[in-house]
Length: 87
Image 1 (cartoon, one colour):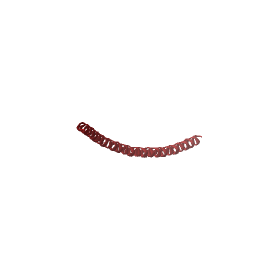
Image 2: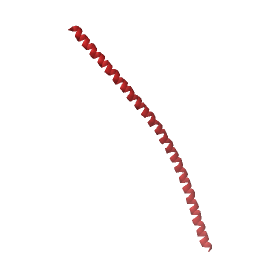
Image 3: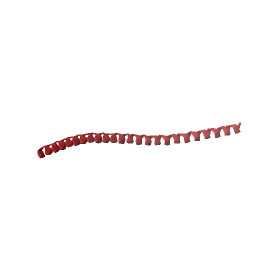
Image 4: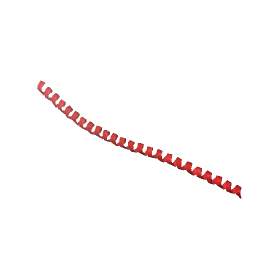
């Protein structure tokens, strides 16, 4: 009977050690998930900032294209005026 008790005690001890090891592993995993979560959040902020920068760039490009269109129109009018004066 004492052999069974010792064997049972060994089994319980192994289970306890396994539970402790599992708890430590889960703790480490939780820390890594926390770190990963922070990194993902930071990347989200960076993507948002990049999106705003791209939108600003697109708006500036639209403004520049409109100014170039106006400049082209003005130059065409100038050429017509010069050609009319020469004729």
